[in-house]
Length: 326
Image 1 (cartoon, rainbow, N blue to C red):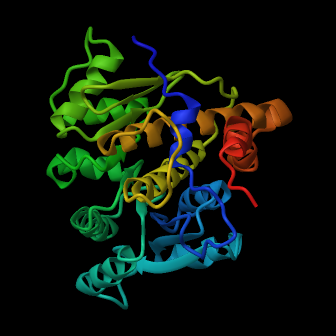
Image 2: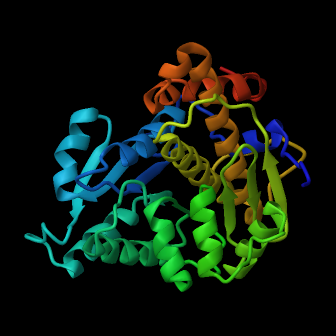
């Protein structure tokens, strides 16, 4: 397995420089689509990670009964109870939900889909429409958890969309391979990942593991950053939030929202690969810091509390070097 890793100086190009004349929203507006009655923490971790890394506005689009719970976690998130489960369909029709979500998408720079969705078919129908709407708007997408089951069942919904990042863990990756008729028998993991990315039309695949594999079917990045030893639920949602953040920044980078002084530029088609790598590196390092502090008591909230420190550890000196003069 090759071990190519982007330079920190290259990744730092995606980070917006903070200046006194910036206004709300210029560092990114994002949304996490997910959260049902049973799983309220997942979209909270996605959106809160993004805010702690430096986006300005984070929305959560969730099931109606999940909304009051997620709102109670923090006032920093804007919570939209648009999704409807099979048992809770009163209120908006599917068409009305589609219009509500599409209206919100028009304000955003990137979207994460899947964290805490659950298996409710009525919610999945809304989410499929949201993925299609985001794709039409050319918004960067992170697809994780229950959204990967949608991809396995309807691969055409995302196939060929190179502005998307899929983040399966090993069991999810195995199911994705099976749905795409790709054999894992006697096949190196990075080659299997490349095959999946190619079969899905060159989107970016991030296979989580001891070493995270990031590929678009032709290039491969390997993230072997040291992480903590706890594998508590929710860390994948933190990874999704980090990827969401760098994708949002990457979209503005592609639009020339800020100038980079680095000699090694990131080509637009490689932004999702670099965003995914940065997310892996930061999440693993935050996990390491959390475990150093909490040991076996480490929870995903412990990792979330370290994500901004992980960011500073990796990028603070580089960003100081390019800090605008007063």
